Image (cartoon, rainbow, N blue to C red; front, side):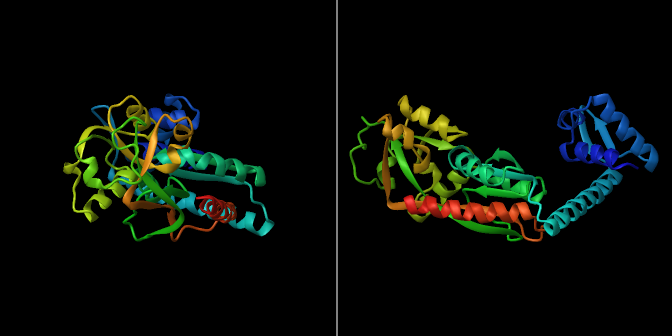
Length: 302
């Protein structure tokens, strides 16, 4: 069995799609299928069930997938150990960030990091907090940066920045001139909410609970999947919302939106999340050290 054949199998097993695996590997789908058939012939058993246009692992396939994952993890550890001995900080880091962080925090951080470590390649996946945590748990990414709570205690969580959430509304809204807003004042007005699984929504729900309310007390007119779509909906008068202050700096400067602090204040942590037992990489150490300093500078400006 060649490393290439095992890598192809592993990619199909991880994505549960021959088409997506072929795209990721820059191969044709027949070539991917042929390599998997060769591996099945070597093991003399089926590794995948293909029924009703769905792909799933057989019991043998699941066993092979788990061992392949261990093999590629050890390969990565070997590569990083040798790089550590030689002082080589090049390579690839797989990162993940929840939507707000990816759109408003990560571009500047990654740009500055790239200037210091031009030989380090970074790949960024964007999802909500729930999705990023799942990627960390499944070893699909090396480091996540999330905006919501993480319940998995087997993961390492490190707070990197304190963010404030505010009420955003049109400048001509009836509440726009207030110094602060209490939750009960929001209840009569149409409210634009983030989607289920969003870290922002989790923080808002926790805040509602501490103030004696539930999500049902809000007059929700629509649920949207990104800060940009929420800001657009607020601008056209669909309702008001609660978002990170960092997402509306441009709109505030252009006077397209108004942002009012909640009373009491609503804050949440942006946090690094990663596997506790994952083998240390020199590139990861460099990125974490840089990101901690970057977050410190950001906090100093808040």
